[in-house]
Length: 603
Image (cartoon, rainbow, N blue to C red; front, side, top):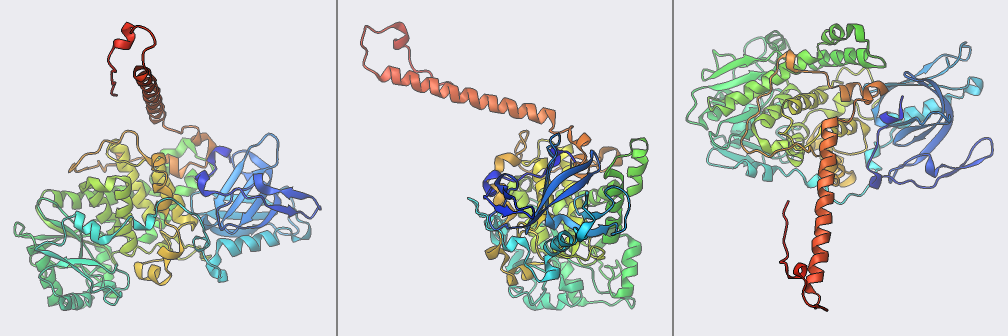
């Protein structure tokens, strides 16, 4: 792997502390140059290995393992290779070969990562040399299986901004003009008694009492009742999210639920129907009746119309991403690329998610109807649809802090199961709950940013760093499954927020082409002709692909901006020098140049 594919962090957040260690050969090494360390990061071991690079062949190096990362530095003169892999990225560690294995580099460790790459290290067969490395890696990559804390709870980084203050639900709803005559804020879930996977603060219809909410909760999966996500500033139609109704095979009804949906519809007198978007394929929704779930039948919900969006479940998405990894790592097969990509169905799934979100956004933007969105439990496909629709409708969410608020609100506070879907610190790589739902959402955002290059304040690097730290366990932002679990673990008090890192160095993540626009609705084209594989994310570990970065147009634009700033600075210096001359008492008769007025030049 080329050095260009090394993952880099802000220099101000790393500490290159001097670590002296005596190796088995008796030589004392100063490792201060060898390994960057975060505050709270400690070195556990280091060992000479052969890294089996899939691009450049075997490379001799020294691997350092801390409680946060695996760091490899090449020992070969003609290779500047560096690997910097947070242990949270590791999904699986396997031993390859045995004591009797024959063949060069056949004995060692195989490491599968969550970020589209694999690592392979060969070690000497004498004296079971891989055993301690295997045990240490397993212990610190999967701390929960060994009663150890995740690194986020040990991280002592300090930033000049506090990312935990980015999202305040009351302020965000106030920005939307809430509460108003039709919608109120309720604290019925303050202690998470109504629904343990919902946030403490909810926005519900003004005409629905807290007792009404309790009765509705009994008829919704996991008690996830319909609550407001977003309200249109002009036509006052809304996006509401929830889980499936508990209809079951017998076709149960709940008058309170039916009345509640009617109250939601009536918050806007201009509309005659409430539109319900069920994210699932209709076949799956019908099948869910067998397990007590189901959907809102037109026969029962008279003032509602139901549409299925045909987005597949978490298991289908997981298998699709596995196929993507197979065709992009380690090598890209050029001759069958298009057919191989098509066989993964990944872009097909992206298309269906985007298409569903466009339908939600269009219905609300047109003022034709308020929209209710759900899937099965309302924490996977539902979050994708509501957050993407809100991104299309509300330009605020296209700013850096606005997007952070969108993620905090629709994903983190509303209980997307990050811990289960990612498997933070958990060694069970075959867990059926693992799924790339949030990655899929970020991919959809990237597709939109490609189609609307001036609409987003953030750049591609911003999206990639979010995904990198989705896995890294360096920050507390994506840990645990819901708000109640984070409160129990005191995440905001005991860990650092990813938004602290980003917001303390915003310039790095800004799109130079960004043009702020108010009230512009974005409708991306969700046809297969206009969607593409996100090469700079999925194939970034391939050094041949890496050479295509950065975007030459963006790079030239940044150079011109830097040049402009340099000229402005020089001009200001000349003006200052000129004004100083003018203020000095004349020592000789005034020259024509001294009599000229001070001209202020504006760029």
